Amino acid sequence: MTVSRPLLLSVLALLAACQPTYTFEPEQLASGPGGMVGNGEPLTPGEFEGGDDVLPAPRAVPPPNETRPPDCDADCAAFCEGAGLKNPVNQGLCRSLWGVGLPSRPVRAAEACRRLFVDMLGRMPDADEAEATCQGGWGDTVRRLMARDEFLHVQQRRMADRFLYSNEVTSLQSIYDMDRLVARLYQGRVPYDQFAAVVSAHPVFTRRYADPGDKAEALFLRFLGRPPFEHERADMARLYKLWHSGYYDHPQLGMRLPDAFVRFRCLNDEGGVDDVSRGGCASVLWGYNELVFTPDWRSARDPSLNNALTLWSGLLTPEEWARLQIPGRILARELAFWERAVDDVLEQYLGYELSARVPEVRGALVRWLLAHHGDIRSVHFAVATSVAYLQSAEGEAPSTYRWSYGPLKQVDAEVWLDSLARNTGYTLPACDHRISRPKALLDAGSVAGYRVLQESLWKFDGEGKLDERYAQLARTLGGCPENVVGGRFRVVSILTTATQLAFVQELCNPSLDPKVPGAAVERLLPEALSARAAMTPEVGERVATHQYRVLLGRAPEALELTEAREAATECARENCTAEEFGRAYCFALLSSAERLFY
Image (cartoon, rainbow, N blue to C red):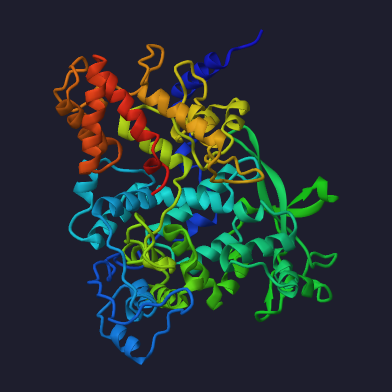
């Protein structure tokens, strides 16, 4: 007899409720070295300076052009020294911007606020939320946004993309632990160099790459932004020879989890350190660093390795973890490590490589980060309150120099979906960046696996089945990556455009198809306006004002209101109602480029 999945899930849920002595807790799934750091107070108070610089007017000199690059002479340097700028990005930019006669482009508050919400909270606001949040200066605004849990979630999702979280490749316990480590990093409780050290020996990192040389190369790429030279790769690989990819049977989840093990090398027949071969487990390029472990009662024989002794990473002590983190500590001594750290943040917010064009910005940010004890939040604050970020991207570029106008980027799939659903009041499930393959937990058939999914961002539908509508749509658009081989992508194509238009059609339902749930009409019309109200130019203006504020997060401009009145006049000739007009107007706004780029 075959038991249906809804019935099985109901039985599992009932069993879970009937076991008061059951000790497994989904929120305590995390296990690994990330839980051993960041348990104290924040490194800094988080009240960073430089959030509200008074920007100078450009010097009265001929600005540079395509044939004459910026050249800051003595007068230019003196001008920037006396500008009173505290933000390190502004300080670094001055000699390539105002000091050489280039103006910065003023930004509208609504444009800047929307950009901050997308980059820091992962969604677009409505006008009421934007006006309540983005006030009191940009420094105060950024502090408020950084204090929200959504800011942590955005950074955790970015790290999931960066390190390719996949519960098919890495232990779910380790993924949860890495996610916890990232949260502590962005709470200011773990300095960036310590974060890199922990990551360098973390099972999420070491389990993904089989070859020691591949592990060394991945570490260089992640934290220095370049592949290692061959001698660096060979030397660093000696510190990764101990790692072995194996499997661990989780007693509660009822699953065999892929996990990292330590394999004993450079030992003699008696299990002691072999003086002849010990050099094969030591790095010598950055000083003498040896990694040799000797077996004890925790060791077990692995049949797949001819019964060689191994040690499961879950049994390592804090002292042993600290020894294994030598590779990360080695890279953190390099200036290039700190330069890469600030370059990553600049790329995240600006969407282009500012440091390569204006190296002074990179130098100023590195000094700023070190002065704040490696608190990476300080760099996020500096970039998000800088002139490079808080400039307008609208209109024709004022010059050929990229830093003289603001960034314009394409939104991620999750940002687009979450914003549309939130702004229209439409209920959607979600996907969880920690669990890229949720069906693996269901297939295990355990109560614990079901509870983990219940406590995650994944949702079940009314029939008890995993609701994957969100994931399927997001993956078509490049989001919710499974991370087994590849990761996230961004693209504008016929397929993605058709997918987006189909979803907007479902949300707004301009054809009033009774089979399409769509957004509630009350969300699309201003308060006290009946869905059956006859259309007039005045009603059209009211609907447009409401939808611009709710769906686009800003007030409409005069030209946009004029167009709305004209559209309402045309609609009135066809005897259409406020609902018909509102749903068609919703489709026009939500399918615009303003929802795809910011």
